[in-house]
Amino acid sequence: MCGIVGYVGSRQSLPVLLGGLKRLEYRGYDSAGVAVIDPEGRLRTAKRAGKLGVLEEELSTHPIADGVTGIGHTRWATHGGPTDGNAHPHLGDDGKLALIHNGIIENFAQLKEELEGQGVVFDSETDTEVAAKLLGVEYRRTGDLRTAFRNTVARLDGAFTLLAVHEDEPGVVVGARRNSPLVIGLGEGENFLGSDVAAFIEHTRRAVAIGQDQIVVITPDRVEVTDFAGDPVEVAPFEVQWDASAAEKGGWSSFMLKEITEDPDAVADTLRERLDGDDVVVPELAELGDDVLAQVDRIVVVAAGTAAYAGQVGSYAIESWARVPVDVQLAHEFRYRDPVVGPHTLVVSISQSGETMDTLMAVKHARELGARTLSICNTQGATIPRESDAALYTHAGPEVAVASTKAFVAQITALYLLGLHLARVKGTLDASARAAQVRELLAVPDKMRTVLGTHDRIAELAHWMADTRAVLFLGRHVGYPVALEGALKLKELAYIHAEGFAAGELKHGPIALIEPGLPVFVLVPSPRYSDEMHRKVVSNIQEIRARGARVIAIAEIGDVAVLPYADEVIPVPLAAPFFEPLLAVVPLQIFALELSSAKGLDVDQPRNLAKSVTVE
Ligand code: F6R
Image (cartoon, rainbow, N blue to C red; front, side, top):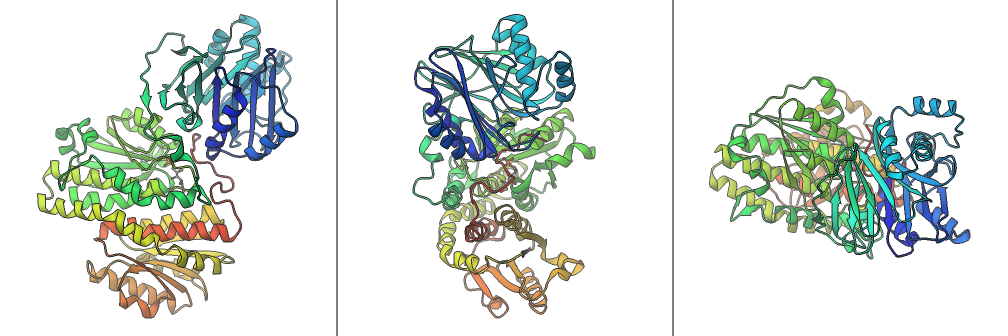
């Protein structure tokens, strides 16, 4: 939700800022803007509604003098529509300082009234401009940017990452964070700030994550981090484990296509160094302690969207292997339901970005209630893992497309590692049973590659269906959350009505939706593992076919029982039940991508969305 970048050094800042914004654009793409201090020490700004390309166009037709200090912003609108005027940066009232913001300033209305009472005039409808104007007033009062900035953040409630530059202090960028992310990139004779490491990965892989309620000041040669009171804070630099090329589209037509193709690697890399022969030993879980894990009597998964569906898939396996009840709760509901959480509850958060505000707040609440917290996260240096007792990183690599794909399969893999680790420490699954599951896990990446080979056929299907107004998805057992995920992908990418249902639920109401020609994807479980479940799903297919549905079955290669009843069959290799979701989701990801492309939509940046949802 909004991407932020800051730079001080010796190079021209505009290319650095625009390059950083390009990599952060997935965080928001309603408008974009930059501010630089030019060689004369004058503040120069440019901002435009629309995607970053519009700003780039503006800068090429109306160039601004560049300098070696600057800040840039790409916006996902909260207060005030996506207009030129509401785009960031916003200026102090004397036009000498520029400020950008990610988050929501909750007390902006009171502050605005107070400032207007002092004669300050506002140019936008944003909450952000209040911080800019307040900083201007404070700067005039104190004559010192650091003090003025400290005084300003002390007055703000809500969530914010702020960066500011001032004409009187060229060569300095100040930043602060509360409940929104901010990371420093450490260079040689230059330093960077960004919402995440993607902002500066092209220039440096050494980074420092800024903690909650901290202020940072960067100059070309120094980085100072303090708390909001101005007391120095120790920082711990880390090395980013991927390089710039991992976050580039390369020759792919979209990031999403590239990332779907990386599904097998996301699974394989997440398993790496967490297996000991054919058993699961996850070093990161040792931080919680095997004795503590052995006593866990309940798991609550908190997550949102796709990550929550990964949690639902994982819950079936963990319950079965470790005999621990697992509840999956939407993070934004968790806090408000007075949850029953005790010292033997393990609260597992799942988040690709590690910054989702709903999930972060759920984790904080769980800790207050005395639970142990484990973060399954894909982003180093992110807030949620730092706020948790332990972190189990998924190694999916940077996910840039707004719709989550490879992170989903990596999250399920991480949950399976947790389930098998727990089963070992609790003694609920013997060594040979655990080894059998590990063999299944290790076989997944190659099987996924086989499924990726069906891309053209799925693309053809999607292109025929470009005019479809609604699609249903049905699954049972672990196929149910996959059905929900298939529907979510289609809603967010193709903007059509899509619903996922538990196949058994259909006759309790939703079957009324079936009308002639309605496409229904059905996830068919393997007959070899569960003949009963397979028969039930085939009966469900017959019920909907009888009412005119057009059935697209995702079924095991060689499942002949399904052939007479399905209009289309997308074959997937045989896998034990818990591993079917990792294969069956791939065609659904491809279908959503291809239907979106067939409709001429932006696959990587669907409307109204942003990748990292840092507001509640
Ligand atoms: C859907 C999607 C979202 C995210 C959700 C949580 O394709 O990407 O539903 O899964 O916003 O995001 P993270 O995992 O970053 O917490």
